[in-house]
Image (cartoon, rainbow, N blue to C red; front, side):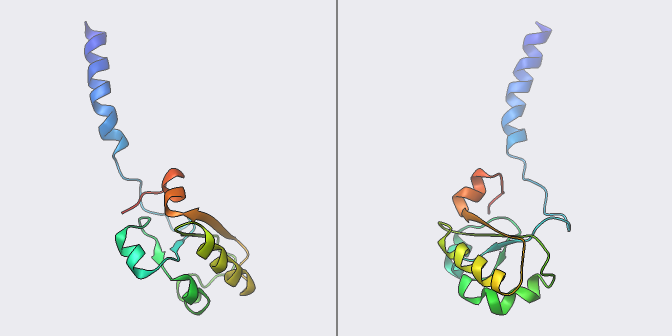
Length: 114
C-alpha cells in the first residue's frame, strides 16, 4: 500500500515538474537572437531572446555582441531569415554563428518560449 501511495504522488507531481521554466541564460551561454519582424516577436519568442530584425543585424549586432568570437544562436520562422543574418554576421567576422531554424525548432530543442 505504501508503494502505491508513493507512485500516486509521483505521478501527480510529474506534470508540475515538467512545467517549471528553464533557468535564464547564464553569462557564459550564447545570446539568442530573434531575427523576425517586431510583430512576430510580440506574438511569441524564446525567453531572453534579443530581437534584431534580419535586415538590421549588420548595423545593430555590435551593441549586443561586441566580441566577434562569441557563439551566437539565430532563429526566425523557418530558418531562411536566420540564414541571411548568419551570412551577414560571418561577413562581419563573427565566427561562431548558428542558425537554429524556426521558433518551433527552438521549442523542440528545449528553449523556453514566451
